Length: 417
Ligand code: AMP
Ligand code: GLY
Image (cartoon, rainbow, N blue to C red; front, side, top):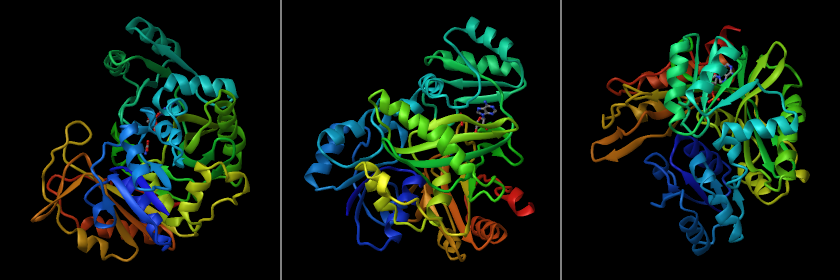
């Protein structure tokens, strides 16, 4: 199949790695891709958020499937522009992508569909935010209403910090003040063709920068899959109580969700609750979910894009454990230092069961340099978590980046039981 993948992160590197692993001879192009992806497939310098540009390219090059990786093109309506030109597209249209683009929209859909989530109050002014903080009480959860690259949420006992966060994001629209939910977090991805949803294997992401879940939230510092501690029937419960009702609600509103429904969940004592929806594959969770996928990814994405999931069996996964550790630049998430050289990438990939997914790298005559906050994901699989984790840390230990930071406790809790 001729496939165009939009995006430039480690997630897109992981998607392309999974498509190539099928060995089906797909012709894959990434736009714009990154320096790691360019080692694998052709890359083209298109702006992935410009619907007309992407659609012209897809038509001119006989692309049979477009896979939209990041949220920005989705929120811009790139999927609509492609579908209008008759191109099979994996990714929701502008309206359905509001599930991620607007926390207030997501709350409305969840209310209408009866989906379990935390209580929330929307605030448009500082006075409203103050009232909401007092009504909800500590710990305080304040969320930017719009897209914020994983940095829009604060969870804190410090009322002044919660208020300052609200004040900052009020200038960019509005905020939600939400009930604090305690429990394990789970990311569950579901393929949706607008009416039928099919689950992938669940993963757990580590959002905070520091070991032991300390410091500010990030885009994600590591992940593992599967979740040996999840209750039997967990995935079915999410489908029945969350994913299917959400897909049905969006379809009834005339904005069917075609693409990847990312359910960000907390398993509380009182049941499973949604803390966020995303409209795309998660990063870094994709890096641990897709290496375990046995069913060919291209067929699943194409079936979702073309309304054929009802007749498609549930995707199958290997029993392997997968762990990913993200290498970030000094100063991330606030103000990353960039331009520093990376050493030891080949040595890292020589560790058995290990591969790298690049996120923010560039190739120079001397080798790769880091160009952003989250630089790359080291991904390891193994027959159990002890093996996968040991391999991931052996590999990341071989990589040199001045000031580079990574968490040392990814998947530690599953190895310890
Ligand atoms: P989000 O961007 O909505 O996923 O939020 C980022 C992180 O904040 C989540 O991964 C959680 O760790 C935390 N979080 C978000 N909402 C809540 C909540 N209602 N209660 C507790 N923690 C939350
Ligand atoms: N890992 C969190 C996200 O992709 O939004």
